Image 1 (tube, rainbow, N blue to C red):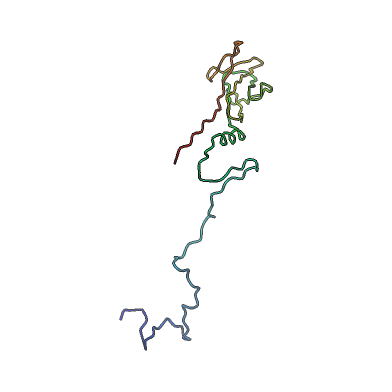
Image 2 (tube, one colour; image 1 turned 90 degrees about the vertical axis):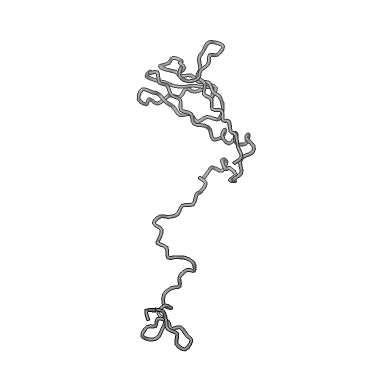
Length: 168
């Protein structure tokens, strides 16, 4: 009656036939087993990747924690730690010198508004430094500082890296 499925005649199921008696369903490509039709992707899928590194900076890729902290200290020592040094007390020309290169060079800070700044990338450690403001040695009172045995004041830059690993 209202059944649109095939009728059984002589023990065989009848398919949907064209005028010439051939099965029209046989002309369409087969569907993938167990998969519904998918819309095309609108973007290219991205797989997470490790950034390219220089041959000397290759790190072992593993999900285990680094057990040897001296090895991790060596890695940080090679790459350096960025540190922003700022002078906020005026002046026309401001430079900085420090123990990071044994007081050899003075680097001029860039003026940004009323402040002078420089970015240094240094190995892990504790450094002393001082500013040269218009030719006069100065220290910044709002940063850690110390006096040496001669009464000279220096700022302290502490870039010690304390790594502790905990079980996940």
